[in-house]
Length: 484
Image 1 (tube, rainbow, N blue to C red):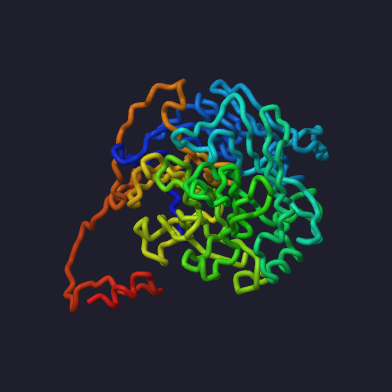
Image 2: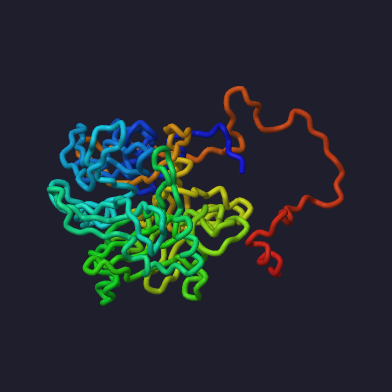
């Protein structure tokens, strides 16, 4: 599909009366971690900090990393996870998961952190009333990597996902490895055969035969206090951990006390109990909406679409790897007990024709969704650097396009988070200025001709113009056909 070479960046829309106003933090290309206000003004930059993702703590602290491993030797391994104050001073650091000696580099201790982490006090890393993350003590949950072999999965080396919990001094107090729970993941025989032959092998530079990025877990958070546990459902114990694996199309909850997987959605969405959800593919940022926010207790997930999963071959997947395919994204809010969809945001809710224009809401990788205090949802459509906020009724009330590109010439944003103004005591509350939507039909760049013709003639017509059927069937076609 076409993409304009000319488009605005920065804030493009701001409805002051309906948006939940605050500061938003995100990784600004290769520049560092930036904090913006509702008008898109960059109020602070932690230059050089890597946000994978970046998260703000009360008091103006930010969490991120100071370096990333050369991809010739490892995939998405951050050297450390650090807490930095407003002035850029490191006040906490974890980097002692594995000591690594890569050729051409000084030996270093690595955290091997990737994709997610949580600080004790808040289960998901974003604002919820009464759930403030600790800033000078507490444990930290970290999603990390470990290279290993597990011949039940494959005879190839695996890039396994581990989840660790470290105390304030950096001591590991809990550890869980995904590969230890292969039998609990619900793969059928076709999927197991594909995984054994090729567990999503990634190969860069000196990785030799490569490593199998077989699950690619991209989020890990605590379940947190919730109504289902209060009602006696032990699967949703607040200490349990919910995570999702984009390559396997799996969302699951790990029981903290035993390590067992006690709840799972996917990888097979053809089962009767989940068929109504349709296929969740390549998803990101699956988490339980925290207590105190609208929708609390429900699962919120950015269902990317794109490609993911293992199973029988098909025309788009000759070997059965990445065998599920969809060219648009969805935000889903799902009751984790009944599995009913409580709320969603798709191309249809965005006002696009489905499926012909569904691609207009589409990020095949990265991305996130945050439930805000007023019931709105902050969405990071990551692959094109678009951050936007919608109401429960799907009205667009804030939009921002990142102007920062990286070395791949993309303005991708992995995740963004909105925090209340009071979490940043170093700044006065900014002036909020409404941004009215632009009429794109008349907007022109300098030198371009305006809309409208200088010369007009009328042609005799036989019938008035009717907006009829498209070249492919749309979802509203049957309803319009049967309407009387």
